[in-house]
Image (cartoon, rainbow, N blue to C red; front, side, top):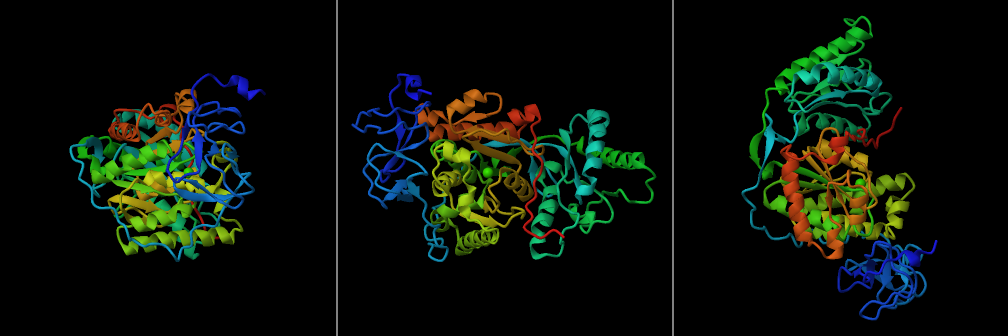
Length: 513
Ligand code: CA
């Protein structure tokens, strides 16, 4: 394919983040051909695809390659000004040592509170606020998944239409419970995840649990404190499958009656608990969508809300930028503890954090996990980090919180749901149809090409930041307003419109027997 002949006549554009950088990202949608000359005299020595890096200066063999003002690797062989820089000529360094970090040395000063912003939500008895009014049917073991899915079809057809104020009924099915080493120390992760999922603010405290009867994880352990509502399929009272389904339907209808009486009320923006993550990242993630989300995260923190960022392997290489921002030494130490736990977890599996970067990431211009991480942590904005959660724990603090999770979109989303998020923001460069049944997911594209191609999947386009048509602050404010609209039920995200809802995916670092 002759790529050069397809390049339209538009001025060559590149983005350099920090004045210290010796590489820049090509913005033009079709990339730029060899011989392209920029107004400052830089001439491309090769075709450079969109999102890929060009060297701004000669770099000696072994010299540092700098993006975001940080070293992302060293040159493999001599790199000339104008050369394409990618994983073929960048050698990745080691992750920052965990015993030499600055701990809570530069917590950002408190910023001015942001007042006057609210949304329409469902107040819960425990003080949290839901953005949807959903009945959840949880499960204590995977053996019952098919049964509750069967019941769900009848519930949606026969019961839900009678209760118009209930948004949906969802089943919390998963692949845990049978043959698990329930007393293994790490089993606490999937167990507390299931417990806390049932407590998600969007479930209104009316969760039901369907169990089998012979599993190790007692269904009662998954109910919110003080609640009843367990059905065991092996209960001798049930004669035949039809009776079990009738039993589930009867329990469900009781709870639908309660939830149907609820109404939205005006609550401050401080009641938002936002989970942030990215997936299918590209070189623009750290230039457009993630910085805009970071600006928005700062607005949320100023409004008194809770904002979580996650994905350990995507913060590990930027941890030296995060521990100084911890509000206290304890928080900094908790950050290090989660990094160390994950380093050990990966080592036991015979890999390191470099296993994170995907072929799609590389095609999108990301050379390695260091470059990906520096773009990923832009989501965290500039606020002080006020708390750290281990995987599956429930968030109890306001402000910017690091919730440790794997970077896998589905595992991260499930753990953030367990942490109690009532709104999810997902940034993507390559594109993903990601969605959750229980929590609205706002998808933000890093490039306008994706937003145009996926015009009925992407909710907000951060691409105009790359072309200079909008600022990071403008898109950050747009996202903030969109969050309030979606949380209020005034606007529907595309994933909900199409009913694109991922399966829950539990993180189980413990053995299966
Ligand atoms: Ca992810």
